[in-house]
Length: 587
Image (tube, rainbow, N blue to C red; front, side):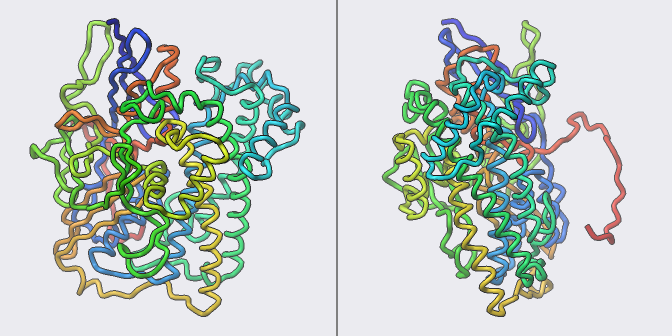
């Protein structure tokens, strides 16, 4: 049997540095795959010895995308350690900040990081603008919405811009695409529709960022969340600020319903064969990119004030294993551990729970073959990302996990939104277990979030109008900062995120963050079980090994954020720079 080795390094249109190595057979079908991060994260070490109340300000620097999520989870870990309950206004504001982040992150991911895996930009130059306008109306009707763009003149203007760029050889960020690849399925008119929405989304995402800044202070790196609550008192007291947030939310919501959802219906229909190709799967269920079929979510977005781990949640917590939609399992945080068998770290020989986890680099490099290329030492250590496991099992996290767990849990809202998608698209539920399904789940969640946030805004306005302006729960740090530990387990746009902190004598003694892209992008474990990225690529059929579009499409469907999982270090111990920090200065 003839086999070829494909190296895709770096995977572009993601946050951070990721390398994929795949082995394909004589039919260009992937028989093995390896996911490797080529960066190191050292945030945990930086936290040691700090005042735990300051951790959030540093934890948000783990990533430049989902900054507010790391910020809040770090704060919540400290609140859990000190047993602090925040006021109602703080809960609602935090939900709105996180909700705005979800909308922004999902929209940017689909249009600006992932859509061009489905949309052939150059093909759009051959489209009939009038027919493209008809496509816009058609797919908006499927979604039960008004199209965001529907005029033939608008599509003609977009097409003229693309034609001009192509003629002048100035495609810029579109220049290195695999245009013309046989695994692009959309018609020229559908491609023009996708490009037009891509450009329109550039404007919409700015409004979504403004939403986060209204209550968060700025975007990225909001600064209004503190241990005990939030600091945006004047924004809560000012009806104009709440009204501005609501107006921006409504405009964003229109685009989600009139462009984002219709585009997903269009892609889901045109790529149906791939989404239902059981021969292209790891476990014979779903379609191309299905992967592990085991999903986990910590749950998120508290809907009442009964307590951090007692509240009813917008996204229920739980596990679905091996594609079995008949059973839901509870999540036990004690069963979470990280394996470093194939990761560039020192280890104790067994998986470590985050409370006692270590982050000690042990880089062993790559190997060279006779063909002159350097390859991963796949039998040894080959990634800077650890291998998180739940009760010894690899699981996938993210929007698909949240939708699957919510659906199996019987959550009325999630069942409604997932059911609407399946009914309107005419696709079977098994289509969710695929690259297309993972992408669709993110859009379904975005619509659900946009609709739900409208109620949260009204809830905040009503609460403030009633005279409740409390935003912070007072606590005596000197009394609560005894030896303790806490965790902030919730969700980020990309999936389950946990921050664990151990406090001794009022200072951080140990800190660990296990992030979504660690769960998904991690390498094999001691038992040889694949990570989510690796499993999702098994069985994938590659049309042209020189243009691995299918590999990129599936990996992008997870929305990789490798910067969350790692941080840069000079592995040879070379001193890169020296910084003098004045600890008396405020951040």
